[in-house]
Image 1 (tube, rainbow, N blue to C red):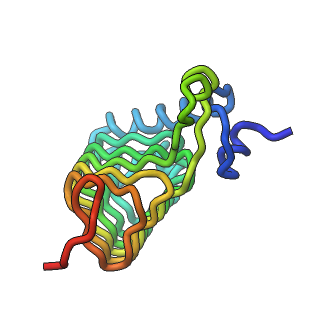
Image 2: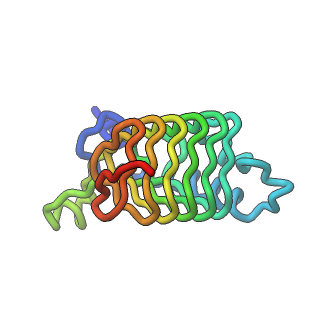
Length: 183
């Protein structure tokens, strides 16, 4: 028998209306709440409960922060997440060394079923990983959609909606994000 968590991890359609997944989300909500409410001097770079979920060494996550599960997030060395970032990590999210996310950047791994009954009643969704390379800059308010890979050294303009892969060193802006010449 395959659980909904196993289906989610395998990149298959799963229902998010599942007791095991809800328990895992509750654990993440508790960790996020601690991170967001501890004074910075007590919280450190990442709150203790959140650090137990996220794989990170020298990363810094400003408060407020939100994630769906936490255990699918891997942050490289010297990664910086500014205030208000949201990572809905139904699939693995990897952010490479020395990358920085501006305020309110959002990363979404879930794609919801297009059939209204399957989406609303059955809670069907599918999870696609997001990979962000090393030394990437993502401007404030940008949204990175499911399944996107952003290459090393790329720049994502503020407010951009990234729906497709971004090549290493490329600069993209707009909605949907499109390449522009590097200045």
